[in-house]
Amino acid sequence: MEITLSLFGIAREIVGCSTLTLDAPAGQSVGELLTHLRATYPALTGLRSLALAVNNEYAQPADVLRVGDEVALIPPVSGG
Amino acid sequence: MEITLSLFGIAREIVGCSTLTLDAPAGQSVGELLTHLRATYPALTGLRSLALAVNNEYAQPADVLRVGDEVALIPPVSGG
Amino acid sequence: MTIALTDQPIDVAAALRAAEDPAAGAVNAFIGTIRDHSAGRRVVRLHYESYDAMALHQLGRVAGQAREKWPMLTQVVIIHRKGTLEIGDVAVVVAVSTPHRADSFAACQFIIDTLKEVVPIWKKEEYEDGTTWVAAHP
Amino acid sequence: MTIALTDQPIDVAAALRAAEDPAAGAVNAFIGTIRDHSAGRRVVRLHYESYDAMALHQLGRVAGQAREKWPMLTQVVIIHRKGTLEIGDVAVVVAVSTPHRADSFAACQFIIDTLKEVVPIWKKEEYEDGTTWVAAHP
Image 1 (cartoon, rainbow over the protein chains, first blue to last red):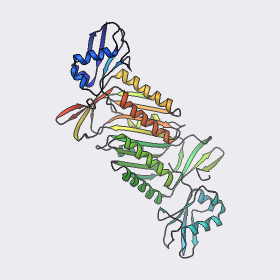
Image 2: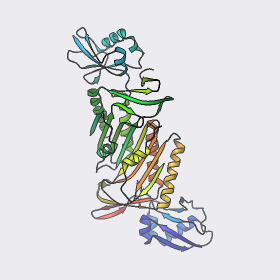
Image 3: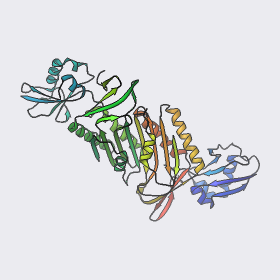
């Protein structure tokens, strides 16, 4: 299934683009996608934290991705 | 010695005037003046607290009044 | 530092601008306004009376105590209104700035808490059927 | 309730007016401004980036959590700036009103503390000789 990933801040700079289209296996979990991304872009492993958001909520590693989900990579936030 | 006492808030209303001139014995203490005022105006005893200020500072009962002191009667404050 | 007692409406925006400082990233402000009720009674308006000279002196002392406890305070603004105030009017503004935010909350709260304990200002609440000097009696 | 993300300067006075409420006597406001230094380096300006849809959703959640913890909250205002900000510019305003003051301090501090932990907004500091995404690395 096709997953479109939005990227922000330092994660956007590390990956080099603000949206990334991935061909993920059906039933891929959030944890698996994070592992894949860290393997592909090793600089992501140096961040203080790295989360995935699905449909505007922070996702847990065991959550399963579905077609049509809004998925975003969330490096350490620093608002305020 | 002559003491001029400034009165505020409910203390002003109880005594009925905003300044009071008293003829106090030389060396009178803050505590003695408060006792005298409570005896003269019994409604003062019903207040939650009653303090004397001398020269813009809260005075202690043992402090001795001097000619020229700015003396004020301070009922419970409620600013803010 | 700005310390003021005024019988004119308080300009809250100006008070906040006075608290900002290029060296400080955090401003905390407390704004006390006139509520339409108190202890279950409808309040019509309030009258604030002040012992001006002592109130200004004590406000300065409170600001000084805050600076001792939070030496990183960059600005302290305390403005208290006096006279007759209507519902919604601003009675007091305390605004402080510090480099980091936790200090700004703690210092601002200390100032308003201490102000309410020591500064010689009195408020009389006016209801539809009477008046009360607030906190005067046990 | 007012929740906003904006690339325009924040009108702090308007934010405070939005927080006032005739039933509430206490307004507490936190204003985050751009400091001229950070970790010992001189800051020239800042760039804020936001995941807008999620940021607004999370700001609403933070406001909802505050209402659960402080049911007496009468108003909640959260406005966050994005884009390029200069020294002294206002980055964020949180303002709440409650009947009594201690709740206003606690609720406002909860909101800004939680906002900084969960809301997807990122700031990049620009120095004379480089830039850093704040808090990105351990």
